Length: 141
Image: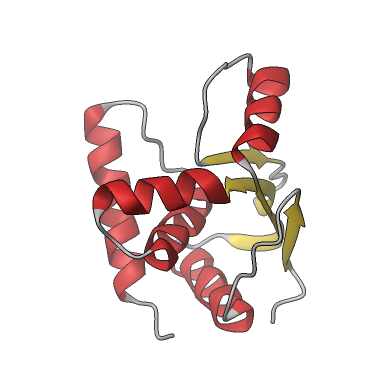
């Protein structure tokens, strides 16, 4: 497992499987996007935990599946990425897909934000989804 990609839990006992393979996949994605990795910390948490972060730091009063704090300096990607396990499970159920697949989508979504992709407009969101799909197909685990 990459020492530059860390996985933590906050108020949840969620267990992410294949951490070593996921770390390699993330690292390969960053390299393919011609960026350099310093450190990414993924924090898996509950809806309520992430809602509090959303309210306190972003002044948003809504549930979300992911919040990415980008600390990148001098071209070295550094970040904390918070993922609501509750929201990911609910999204997977609504989409009719496996929770693990949606977890991987959210993981790589955060990485793509760090690589410069946005999703505010319809066109940006379409490009982001295409990149997510591309990198999800490259998983070998």
